[in-house]
Amino acid sequence: MTNQTENKTQICAIVNVTPDSFSDGNQYYNPQKAIGHGLDLIAQGADMLDIGGESTRPGSTLISAQTEIERIEPVIKGLKQKTLSPLSVDTWKAVVAEHCLSLGVDIINDITGLLGDPNMADLIAGSNTRPLFILMFNPILARPQLSSSLNFPKFCLNDNLPAFTSTEYEKMAEMSILEIMKFYFDKALNIAIKAGIKKEQIYLDPGIGFGLTKKENLQLIKNLSVIHKLGFPIFLGVSRKRFLVNILQNAQFETNPETESGFANRDLASVALTAIAASKGVEIVRTHTVKAHLLAAQIGNAIYQADFAADLELPKYENR
Image (cartoon, rainbow, N blue to C red):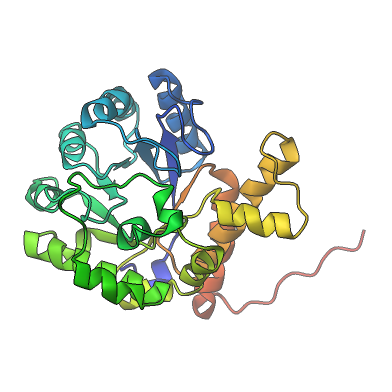
């Protein structure tokens, strides 16, 4: 964990190399466009990039590891030639992660938190580069029979090897969403530590937007301190998530992404959450845009570090 007086919420900017992602699918599917977009995000101030080759939105179809590699390899290679900024790859498949690590990727972002591919833990533990590892709580895997979960892919390589035992599923069925998240993390972290992944390599992600109700999304964000109490830094992805759109719609704001104001409002809502996240000491936020999130993070960080702020009197406004 970062010392509080040194805290700075970092911006991890998204580079989707997919034809069907929920908010920017097909915009950067061409490798050269994706590379250019990534470099532009870094120029705007992004601390790192998260590259994804497989859409995980509701209704999406999983692709093979080879197809995923073919999509992201040229982008990784192009970015490695032109920037020293850390690169993350959003994949839950160990074969893809292994290939990307061989290309020099610094971070593996696993949306199944080691429960989708049984080979991921050993791969991360055995890597000589000791990459950072984003371990996400995946509500889809924790509650596969919910109607909201059925809209998503299964995120599992082996249908005969479920993420949890029947007894564990029964236990979780009686739990609140916070309890389920802690139960999930406990299982995944046991796998990680047993495999030899070092604690300092791990960030935890509360899995916002993955088959959660509006209330559950809000409860997880309100209680982000639960993750810090577990002793881990937080990686938070909330940018353009559907529950934000619902909040805006209920407040009578324009949300149609086909209109300029509707699209902008979705990003403004995302920016507001970055400020809130930073005020809670979140270490990394994953966003589609950069500039406004940098500003929001500065305000949030200032609130988080209020006890360490200079106790100075602010200058008076000039009379004009």
